Amino acid sequence: MVQQGYGVSDDLIKEVEEEQRLLRLRSIALRVGGVFAVLLVLAGISGGVWGWQQHRLHTAQAAASDRYFEAMQLLGDLNSPPSTASDARQKAEGIFSDLAQSAPQGVRSYAAMYLAELKEQDHDHQAALALWQQVADDGASDESLRMMAQYRVLNGRMTTAPRDELRRGYQALVQTGGSWTPLAKEGLAVLDLRDDAKPEERAEARRLLLEVQASPDSTDDLRQRAGMLLQTLGEAG
Image (cartoon, rainbow, N blue to C red; front, side, top):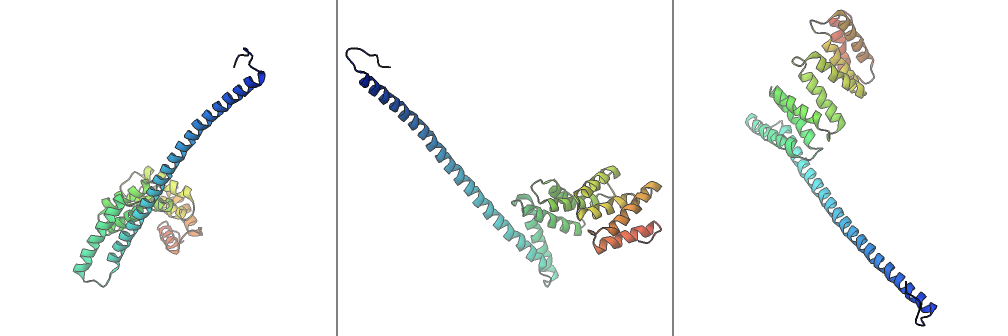
């Protein structure tokens, strides 16, 4: 505050105070403006980085998709001579193996699933199981693909895994609903039809198989399998 005295008028004092207020406001505005400018620069950098990352992701996905379809074409040439077909299959497996490890999500899981089927055809059951488990454990994978992988893991371990562990796995699939429900119920029924199954377990298997036959989500093949299993219980499906 400017002290009044020495003949200084009130108007002059007010004028000086107003100038000081304006100076303070201008200083604040400059500081705030500087902050906004920095924020805008940072936002621009972040947006540029994000855009570049998205561009790289799309480019990587496109390249991985091209390699995936290259492997599919190698496997699809049924007119090749046996020696050429063998080389093509080996090359395709190599491509799928690379993609299953390093491709962006969306291609990685599909490559792993296809490679697992090839390993199963080659009677390399452990490699197939490892690939199915990889997809089942990958939280970034498509949910339907994860469920399929989990189903293949359960079926693949039917004769080796503890029964309680398998039962929990099939029950988890039942809870997902939809087309997985009858498939998982078929798995539960198979568990209850083992040679050492108790009478109540066989009764539960029969109930599950009848539900599989009646389910609108069951395929014709699945209903036929359920009927065959019911016949093992002495009852036509």
